[in-house]
Image (cartoon, rainbow, N blue to C red; front, side, top):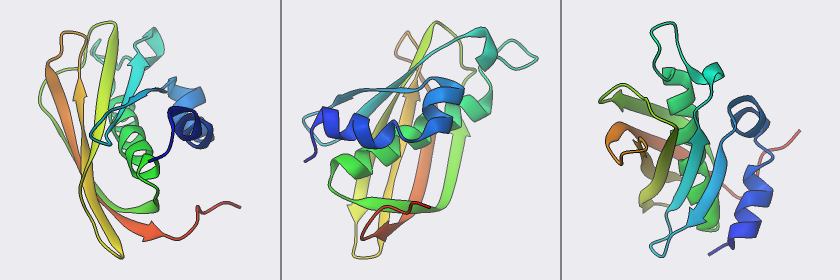
Length: 137
């Protein structure tokens, strides 16, 4: 298992998640999951006054990617599906990434996103292609 510092160093290279949305890595949990956090700011709201779905998706994807990396793997997405269960609101959101199965080629997992009252607001399911090394240009 990677350390929190190693996961942050790798994942903070995701400039969209970190700089555009402000997502952070909070912790690596005992079960190998990773918790990411997003402090809600006015830039995250849609025209309806709720947190934009894209910001929620980015946080969930970031938490899953961090969980994969924390568990000593690299990957690239094959497919993702998200279900929005309630409107995002409050002062912050957290997402907990998890792995269901990591095969030789495909990793199955997801993330659950919670509001600041610990209510489940979205859940991401994804399949990722397992890589030997990270893809960088």
